[in-house]
Image (tube, rainbow, N blue to C red; front, side, top):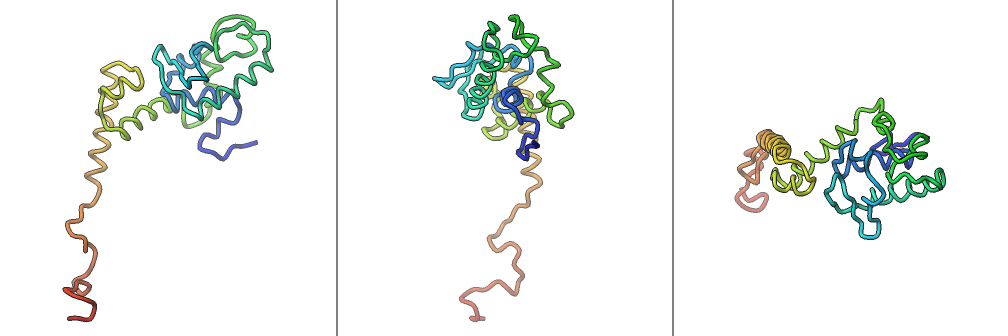
Length: 186
């Protein structure tokens, strides 16, 4: 079955639980692979990504819940502490491989890295190009936050320059359409 949603690759619980942390929380692929069960608190709606606690949005929370249901059915006796497991890792305690992790977005225009970058840039565009805000929200380094803020500032400035500025509320009317009084008073 082919998805017609915004993420055609996210058609399975596995794909959704891999893609959403990158797209919604700007998680790096290595962080997603290393996510442990105790990094997720479904009751308090919190997720810890690389040691940085964040609010767990409803979409990602549902994806994790669906994945955990699938995981319990598929590997009921696994002792692997990582959120993501597969046929190989269910028998041990190591995280999934990067190759396995990126399989849902293979042959797609949007890679996990692109989704992560877009998420951070969107935050900077939506909430203003403030590097301190970006560092706090995503737990990223100062220089990384500054780069995203600079990119957002450039985008905002270039889009502001491209918008036409109207000096009059009658912009676009011809001189015949301007009136000093009610219609027909000329």
